Image (cartoon, rainbow, N blue to C red; front, top):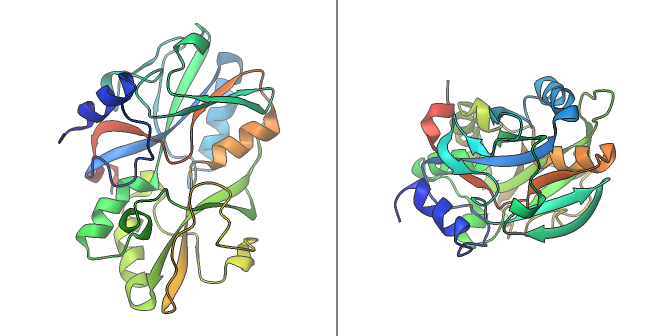
Length: 257
């Protein structure tokens, strides 16, 4: 398989239920949030106020499940490997198909993901440990609060990639260009400074090896939107499972400036 549509087709057929880092390298990956129309404007406002963790790539029409901008013909109800369903802020299930939950008042938001700059990191000779170890990226809640709206608020969630000290400047240079995929790191070094007590126990994803000569580097993460949903407790919300992203038709270079 060499194109994004092939991966989406596998999801639609129920044949792909794995985290997506390292898959379809060169194509933009996206977080998914689905909310009732009554909350759509305020969620869009939350994303606009917090563009680092929540860069908007596409928004569906009310009741429409097609991503017309980033993957025409795709179906957000079936074309991701795994979804989470929340009722009033409580996770009720994970599933590989949300057609039975779909309603005519729902709006889908596709939000940039740091997996989209990992191909550029690899091409620059930089280490991407979770791909090397065939794991999901480790993600952590921090003590940094996002700018809230009336209903939505959240601590910033970050993803972490350990790098040798002599690769960090290059990693900042490479990833900063991808402003719609979280861009440059938000923190380098001591995790306790941003409220992370144990890198071996991520809140989402998998722990990865950190070698003696390596420093943890943290990027903003779209899973921030899921913690906002847990706080807001909407009557219904649907998201991707962390690390199980939507693979779009956009080339990763389209997210650079």
